[in-house]
Length: 154
Image 1 (cartoon, rainbow, N blue to C red):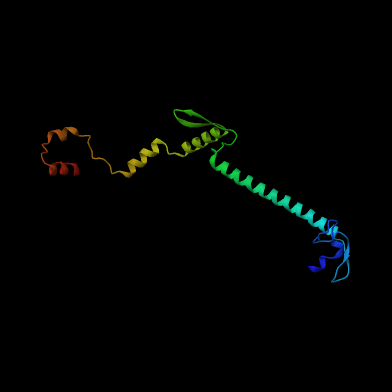
Image 2 (cartoon, helix red, strand yellow):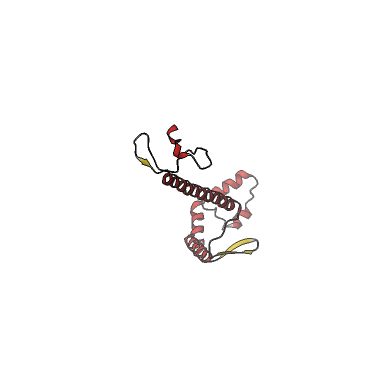
């Protein structure tokens, strides 16, 4: 970098600058270099890059703060969903309540009727013993369990 320190690089106060302010020939290719435009362009680029980096950092910090706030804040309900306390149980009202009511109605409609339930119970259990003739039961003297079992098996 010794070639940058030329006699035209001297300032008015006498100290040497790294880049000359006047155009000078390049020692390698002998083309005239205009340092002032190069320096201005580099400074402009540095300012632009610094602004871009600052904006990126600011956005990153805002995103992290937003994530932290979302983690701490209670969950928001969607519009149209309100709750009211009825016997200490939240009950939906509005669109959600209507859809839940329709769901309950379809669920209730899919349940078997009482007659179907009793038919299932009767078909699953063995038939009960015939107890229509209770007078015979009272007239017999059934004293042991074996006597009762024998009478039921008739």
